Amino acid sequence: MVIPKITYMANVQPTIVANCSPCHIPPKGFKKAFNTYDSVRLNIDEMIARIQKRPDEKGFMPFKHQKLSDSTIMVFVNWKKDGLLEQ
Image (tube, rainbow, N blue to C red; front, side, top):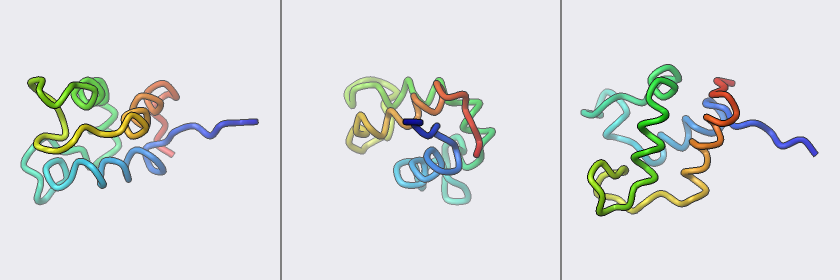
């Protein structure tokens, strides 16, 4: 059985829209923009590090929200592991 690889368009972008907006989605976003493939690809290590933090740790994301589920965090981790595919 072939397990489909995680892609930005199918998996990562919808997860960002659901969990990181409006803060990281222009024009309402006022933090580092994560609304394009390149911006997310270039910041994936920092994103993973911050969403893996505990809510009481400095730099935790999503700020002032509950910690993302392990399965949601794994979307980002597996996307990186799969080679940061766009489509």
